[in-house]
Figure (cartoon, rainbow, N blue to C red):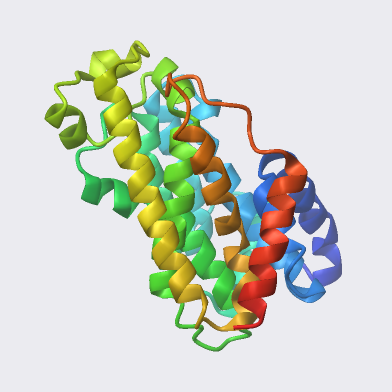
Length: 290
């Protein structure tokens, strides 16, 4: 890995990550406030990295340029990046976090690999594939945050991160169902659509029906099960890692609204900010006492 600037030179990079996450991922920005002050910048750098990868689809008009962007990030992580990698604020900050905490590179590489799916318009093949996607994106980010917060110890939160990440990712996908459909993306597993006799074109066209509502309800139930499993595991988890899992607190309030709408392609307004923050505070209080 290429040498990085001294810590004082990285302050603007961390400030950039802070603003990026505050503007683009309010849940994780608020969750970082529950972390010790010395770890907040590290969590926000990881969240900024996630935002950079997740937004690649929005920045390109076709898959190939997206593949090139994702390969650039792979090269950054492996130390093969071309040019002055440290001039990219998110790259500089995340490499600093990885280096100081001796974090494994594989989860970040797997996160990039999972996001390749976003570049194409193929439907998600199966429930197992969807769970893998959730685990390698939101779940991996939570687990990396837990590693940072555990101060070098093994937090033993892998299973918790898997369930919490899937619950959080699935809730986000349900909230964005209409947006994704308008762009030709289908995250609903093909096997679930086939079981209800729904064609991919029906989803892309945003056609609401009793069949698609049954699929929506099944996905809400799936997210609820993962959230419940995560809550159970959180009771005995390392309490130092609470900030990594605080976003889980937003899942159930949002699922309740999603499960009540008549057209799944038109999501309801988001839960009010103060209610989400209250849910986060309560979760952190319960988790912190575990």
